[in-house]
Length: 112
Image (cartoon, rainbow, N blue to C red; front, side, top):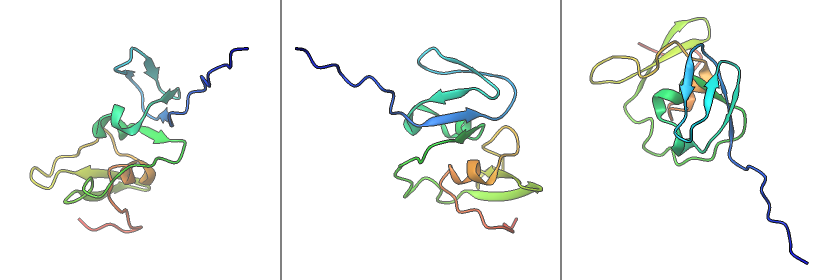
């Protein structure tokens, strides 16, 4: 008797937060409010800013957030800035959780 392979998708779940359409590299089309299953390395840092991780993400963030700057834009919304250009890495202001996905530590009252 053959044993069934475990075909359960074990990739972390991400929920798209903003309007617009994301065309994932595996052909999935994701719209606002929909769920994407992908490993963190399958999603660019800029794209991650538009998503909220629904599962615990285990990543090696040792160098990821070094040098990045977090700026509070409005109540509970942040921009993660490239320190050399001072341009946001995210398209729209993002939540604290999304900002932390860049590897930065977000304090309640970030400077800048």
